[in-house]
Length: 323
Image (tube, rainbow, N blue to C red; front, side, top):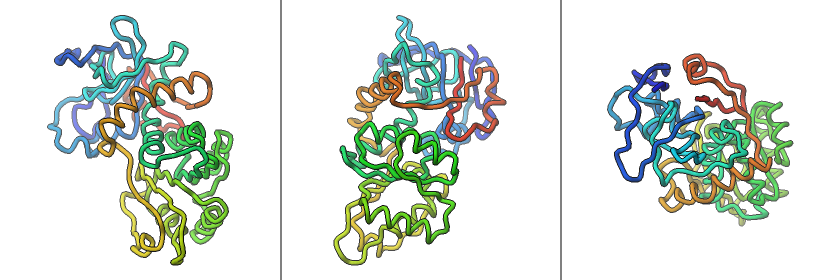
C-alpha cells in the first residue's frame, strides 16, 4: 500500500510503498483511510520531539495519529491509531472510533477532532465550564483556538474574550462568537490594563491558554490580588507556542484565587478519554453537520505529502491529506 513514511526522525515524510497493517488484537479493526489531518502533534512525533515518543526505538514510521475512512461493512468512521494513519490502510482501536455522519465532509471530519480534544476536554473537564461562564482564550487565532471559541459558545459561555497577535484573525473570531478581542501587539502595560478592566467588569472564570510564555505572565500579573477577596479563576494551559516556561511570582498565587493546570495527552483520566469518543466528538460532528461549528482545511493528495509537509499553511486552517 501507499503511505507517508518517516525513515529518519526529523526528516520529511516520503510517499512510498509500505507493508499493509495486520490485525493483531481482538479490539482492532482495519480501516480504509480517506483523509487524515496533519497537526502539531504529528509533526512533533515525526521529529521525535514529542514527550510521547521519548522511549520509542527508531524505525520507519507511518505518520499521523487519527483519520477518517470506511470499515469493511461500509461504515464511515473517525478513528485514532498509534500505528500511523496517513496511508491507504490503518489499524484502529475499536474503543477509539466514532461514527461520522454521511453528510459531513471527510476533510472536516478529519480536521475537527484534534481541535475538539484541545478545547472541549479542557473546557469540560479541567475548567468545569458552566452556562454563564466568562472565558478568556489566550492565543485564540490558531485552529484550535478558533474551535474553542465556538465550543465555549455551545457550552453556554456568557462572554468570550480572545487574545492574539494577528489583528485580522482576531476580527474573524468576533464573527465566530467571541465578544471582545485584546491584541497581544499592545504594549505590556496597555495589555495588562485591558485585562484588568475586563476582569473588573466581568470577572473571568476560565483562562484557556494555547501559547504560554510571556502572555501568560502578563495575564497572571493583571489578575494579581491586593489582599482582599479575589474571584476564583482556573487557568488551563493546552500549548506552549510562545515558550515552554514562565516566571511566576509566589505573591500572585498567595494573593489571587487562581488554579493552574494543564490539558493534554496524559492529563485525562480513562473515564474522560472514554467520554471524548462516546459523547464529545459525536456531539461536535453533529454540530459541524448543522453548521454550528466551522473549520477550514487545506487539502493535499497523499502523493504530494513531501511538498505539503513543508508548505506554509494559512493561519486558522488545518492541513488534511486526502487518500
